[in-house]
Length: 256
Ligand SMILES: NC(=O)c1ccc[n+]([C@@H]2O[C@H](COP(=O)([O-])OP(=O)(O)OC[C@H]3O[C@@H](n4cnc5c(N)ncnc54)[C@H](OP(=O)(O)O)[C@@H]3O)[C@@H](O)[C@H]2O)c1
Image (tube, rainbow, N blue to C red):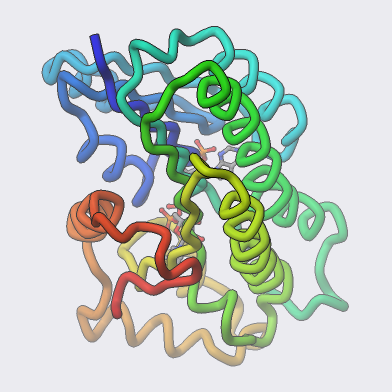
């Protein structure tokens, strides 16, 4: 058996769920990591004869999640794996407010889920899969970090989310340099996916206008029909992942 392995955080709903669904195929193996599992995804995986594992973990406990991933990967037989891909998709926008009026616990949580967990999961993924490379395995290894335009452009009342995404972009640049030192290094991209019709957009539109100067922009994205469907975004992400030059542009935008 030679399977393409995909690890996707935030696979329980939104774009991550659509991406997990798009990746169901008999020669794929999918591990989803979210706080909740998704029954429809389980049924779809059975229908597509795809081995699916869903871990219900809170990524704000990032060290525990990364340890679990490293152990799980270390237990796999590299000869069963054709390629390995980690997709750090889970992200959180805490209550939308200026930093001075935010709850410290919520800010810390958003940074743990949005930045610390992707870094530690990337560490676990690279470390475990480098063990396979050392043992002679030569399959491609990819990390796709789901970033945001807000990692590249500031917005009032979005400091934790903007900081997490900016950090994600920059740690990806550093890891790309690390991996370029190795003959069989992994490839990494931090990709802004565009604007997608998910709970995250509902949260942005539903913010308190008095706390969020840009709220009307998000209302307009919805009323003007400018949001992509999750399925469309997922299909474009899969095409992006399969591009031969994946990793050539480390910080990228799906809309380019
Ligand atoms: N939607 C957009 O317009 C847009 C634009 C730019 C970038 N993005 C980025 O795209 C990615 C997906 O966004 P989305 O819109 O699909 O978001 P979403 O609908 O809010 O879904 C977020 C996913 O992350 C998981 N998650 C949240 N907190 C978690 C935690 N503590 N532990 C484990 N999993 C957690 C959720 O699962 P559980 O609740 O089951 O834990 C869910 O599966 C995010 O990184 C987001 O920043 C989205």
